[in-house]
Length: 459
Ligand code: SAH
Ligand code: SF4
Image (cartoon, rainbow, N blue to C red):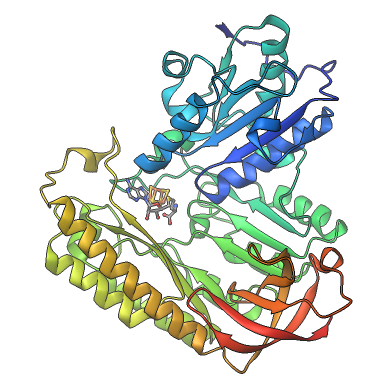
């Protein structure tokens, strides 16, 4: 195994004739980083393919937030060992949070790995790959902190019309269950001018939707002498010809009145807010090191509904945090009923080594946690369905993603509230040319996870 010292991209390397696949696990930041890895491979001449079997170069952008994602990544990489590749030799590469955490130890578990890079040095990937190809020896480089934002790298976007725009990286909140601060580093805000420069480019490229990314977008700028703040980014984004602006994730302790005002006043900011609550019990929130109360959270929800108006609310919830009692859990259920979430990402607590919660007493039986989890999922289905029902009879302007997963003749797109909308493709229309365009849909039916309707107009 070689350790690469000089990580300047190898200018001579070409990958023409070789194929690649980038597999992304976990959060939206990984999806953004995956687009950059794909972008660099495009520039070098490699061709994207859909199936691992067809790929000469496979890159896994891994996640270790929960154990399940961890196991899946290890399993998938190990399973490549005996799989033939199109040109005889497959290069197996790993980036993302598992790579950052497990480092050299990975080569022992996964001897078929050729390249390992971390969360702070995506730019080094082409050079590492070139060295691996030249020397036939595994390459690894892990840095302890980021010196630049990967947004300056070339990008191969999943959808031409949508761009992830990181405004900060890392996290300094240290929720007691979470590994993110350890594998993504401390929070670092991206300079405002750089964000604006990227928006200029995206506007020029005709991008229709931008999602600002950060583990906690609301604390943007705290490390930049406090100005500008997140509300200033939203206001500035409103001046661009980019019709839809979204953002994730919001932390209840930092969501400010200014940001809520900006959500209301900037027309292109979509009526959608993901405000992770994690638990409905103040006692558990304290143990999680989430410094807000449910009363404060509900106050924010009221303010958002008053100031912004009709809006889709979504959240993240952990069930079975160490010491969670039945009463704590019932408070989570109560909160969900009160808020009426359109969507919630629900997780069973996963013990992560090295985090403070990993050493907290945890004696709730697995079946009890599973039962709580199932009840919560059922409740969220009810609140999501109710939120969708309210759209019946309305007209929704959707941004078209393409065909639905099940039927090539069903158009799938997103409403302003980010609800999935389905409508039959009108006769004689071409699905391909609709991608990334706006359509008005009359909503006739509301299902739990999507709305159904028909096209009334093309914009
Ligand atoms: N920064 C974002 C979330 C990043 S991780 C935020 O704070 O909102 C995405 C979600 O994974 C978290 O919101 C949490 O609900 C969940 N999560 C994180 N660590 C977890 C763990 N150890 N077990 C179960 N779920 C976890
Ligand atoms: Fe993890 Fe908490 Fe940071 Fe979110 S805010 S990434 S849950 S430590």
